[in-house]
Structures are given as C-alpha cells and as structure tokens.
Length: 218
Image 1 (spheres, rainbow, N blue to C red):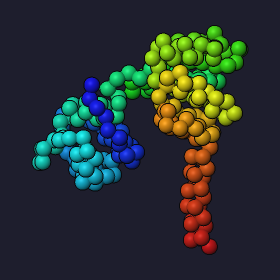
Image 2 (cartoon, rainbow, N blue to C red; image 1 turned 180 degrees about the vertical axis):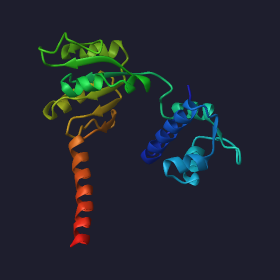
Image 3 (cartoon, rainbow, N blue to C red; image 1 turned 90 degrees about the vertical axis):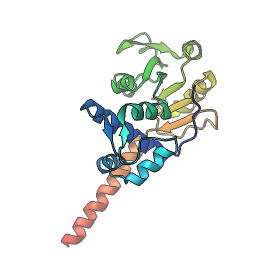
Image 4 (cartoon, rainbow, N blue to C red; image 1 turned 135 degrees about the vertical axis):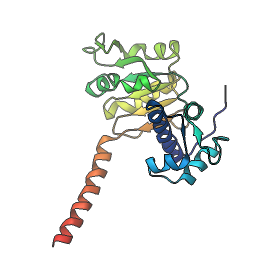
C-alpha cells in the first residue's frame, strides 16, 4: 500500500479538475495530453499544472506530454479514489434521500453501505435499495461493515451528537450538510456543505454586479 502525503486544499481541488479532464479526454479516445492543453481547458497555467504534479513524482516528458491512462491511475491513487469507500448516511429525510439517490457517488467510488434515522416512521422503509435502519444499530453496523465515511444530513440541533457517535464508532471522515460547525477535534476530517452560506455569497456577488450596472446607468 502506497503512503499518502498531506496535500494543500487548493492543490486537491486542482487535482480533482485534472482527473475529470483526463476522464473526459479518455472517453473521447485521446491517449495523451500536454500541460499546456490541460491549462488551456481548465483556465490554469501549464507551470501550475507541472508544479502540482511534481509534488508526487515524475509525470510525462518535456515536449511529449502525459499518457492519460497512467496519469489517471496516479491521480486516483493520490486522491484516494483507487478504492471503494463505504459510507453511512445519517438522516433519511428529503435531503438524505436525495443523497442516497445521487448516482455519481457510486461511480466515483463511494458506496452507501448503511442509512440511519431516528424517526420510527422512516425506519424499515427502503430508498434506492437501502433499508433505513434505527440509530440503535449505528455503532454495530459501522464496526461490522468497516465504514470509514459518514454523511450527516440531520437537523442542526442533532448534528453534533450524530457526528460524535459516528466518530466514536470508527468513522474517519464526515461530510456535513447540517448548517452548523462540527467539533470533532483531530479525531476525524470534516467537510461541510452549507447551502445557505453559499447562496448568500452568490447573492452578494450578484448584487455587487447589479450595483455596478446601476451605478454606470446613473
């Protein structure tokens, strides 16, 4: 098993973009790409691309470019996408059910292995082939199925308690959809998806643009 090194988050985002473009090029039948071609498509400099990739060893050759197959394989390994990640979803309401039904999760290597909810009215129902389980079974299922990732899609007031239970059960990474900050110290990694915050940011950016247009008109 290859060792992994910490990667700065901006680099992780760019590596994900590189991998998507590699997959796109392979799907259309290409076998090779240059850093200049990648940069032109992604809006980055070829220098930045070579710098990012050089963090992980030798890729490609000057004047020849990168072979897509080994580049894609190496990017998947670096990003941890060279394996299947068993994932638990806690919260099977509308958002949780949308997450469970999201097809690209499986294609990207994230397998929904268990779904939990505290609502007796939901427990026992099936969503996309997944039976919704009682929270009483959470620790047992997490351990038995060696689940390492958890998706938190519960109301804000329940999110921290859910996160604590998931981490205590052995989960090492949390994707948080609740509109609150989760405090798990250094016991696990947390990525938060705050729809409201992102919409507010988007509205602010759009309003600035509109204000600028209004100022010009006036």
